[in-house]
Length: 508
Image (cartoon, rainbow, N blue to C red; front, top):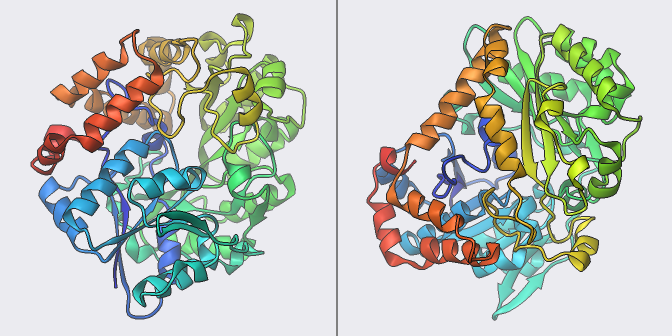
């Protein structure tokens, strides 16, 4: 059986600014399919295409989706949901015999919706414990009800099998098959000397229970780790492929400080051959300031710090982010200065738009600018099934969260806070000049982020303009605007014909 692991092209990315801008800032290969390839039964072939980053002309892309017997997608975010839905419709139209399986946080939370949109099977948990069995059943014409941890339709009825067990240790997960990855589309720009960006998973899940986060729901509130020997083995494999920058994919990097300190000793062995970056909670650095120095000495050059807010009351009441140490602006500034001493670029993520946030507790760009090099503000996005959703939905109307664009207000009160905040970020010339002259990783991060931003803004067509002006209409609700987008992109046969005929440079 021929299997295509697909991240589709950005058929809908939003304009003038892409909603999921962070994906470009942390550009690196996903590891889901390289791991699952190791579990394929004999006699099957898998290819991986990352349409987010690989500039294939449309005619080559269409040839590719006509090739497989099975298409596998990993749907992680509401930002990309419309692009995935367009891709699924395109596959069903051009390769109707192909089966489609989907996994990931978003596919799990909205599994019934994805089945309605054309997906044949949803993986509801960890792939390592069910992928081999699922492939055998599909290739042999068997029944999905024999496979644990899947959802599907049978006779028009929704069916969900018993949850698949989780692997106890991540060392049980196969090492990624790096032959599947085209590293050339992930260039390294955080350190001199060129090379590629690779990915590493040292832990999976998160022990914290932030109200907005899908991670504790998907991974059942657990966090599991790889042994240090296994991590070193994966680093050696990446270095052998020309990787010089490694991005850590962990949701909860730094949660276990004892584990993290030992992990940094492993990274330090390779500091002359690689740099690395990761997401990290603000309170991990606050709890152990020496961790920053150790991270810098082990080769860390980028940290995406989840501040969410500099207001402790907002963190506790609105976001539900349990902090292990008290938080205030002065202490966060000290942490930031620690990163600066180690020449670690700090991208700070903040959240706005929760209806419980009063005017005095909303994110201030000037305050955020004091604790990081590049402050980014995102909407508070409550998803059905997450820990804070039900209580919030009882108090406030919430738009359909299956899909999201930053121009769609989530709550009835229209908020432009995120737009203004991120516009200030773009226009902040003193910040840009500071990054430009600070060091190699700062300079190239700045130049690449602006290059990507302006590239997306200048690639304009009439459909993007139509979408933009529709989003600005005050007589339509967010759900009505979202409904129009889905009608235009999924139900209009003229769009499908137009899409198939496009050259890469016209729309991507």
